[in-house]
Amino acid sequence: MSRLAVALGIGVIIAATASAHAERIILADPDPELRRALTTALAPWHAEIVVGERDAPAARFVVWRQGDELVVLDRERATTARRASHAGPLDAVSAAEAALTVKTMLNLPPLAGAPPPPPPPPPTTPTTSTMRALRIELGVDGRLAFADDRVPGARAVLAAKLRPDTSRGWRVGLVAELGTASTIERSGFAGTWGDWSAAAIGSWSIARAAWELEPYVTLGVTRSTLEGTEANRTRVEHATLFAIGGGATVWRTLAPVRVGIVLGMQGTPGTPTYTRTTMGMGTPTIFQVPAITVGLGIVVGVDLGL
Image 1: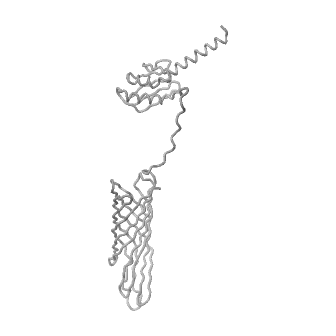
Image 2: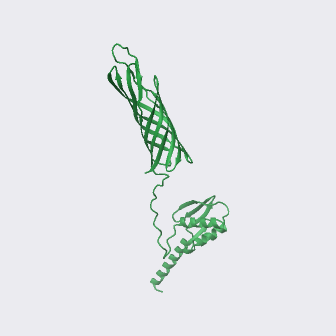
Image 3: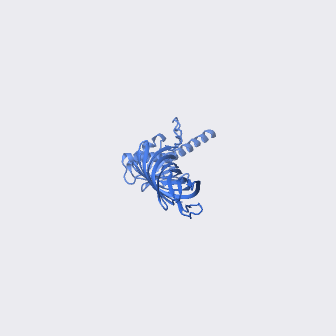
């Protein structure tokens, strides 16, 4: 026999031995259902499933269960992989699931003529449960302002609140309020007082089915205007004041909108007091800008996904 033939023969033997070693898998688990399922799952690769101890020779992979985990030992790479499984005896269904898991963990080469694996799925877009949402609100309320006198009135309210992630309940935004003018007649002054405000708002929603409770806080400024006549002369007073407020809205979903009842309070520290300026009449008080305002009203809102 020529040297070439001997070399080719030795090469074939080595290749066959290596192939046999790669196809032999030690199953160190006595469960018969797992053995049957693993034999079926690995049949296309002509794998030999040997039930025995983990130190059995001539096998690259060793498979066993440890509690409720599947363990695969790759002797060649000296690595161990673990996946969740079932503890105790397996039925046919759970054994088949375990066998498919083991097949994935083995990272077997593709079969000859097998179709290429499918491409990875495209990245998923956020669903409406996690997308940003913008709530637009329009409301009216009756209010009572407390100063030296109680000043009744009404307000129109417009708000826009952004919910950066609808899986969480908090919102941030802006709110603007425009109050009606109240008549002031005192100490020779006849005119009106009115105000408007703009503020940042933060809120937290607690939803239960079609109902939602949304407490909130505001921080901004209010612009107060007193104008009228005093002793036949025009008098106009303006003041820009810091304002802080808070309250809560109870919402009811009436698709496609929400309807709510809102109760709120606003405090304005350091409000001015206006007195008569006409000479010879002393300094009686004409009007004190209210430091506390309480309101109760109704609001309609709509949520827009972004």
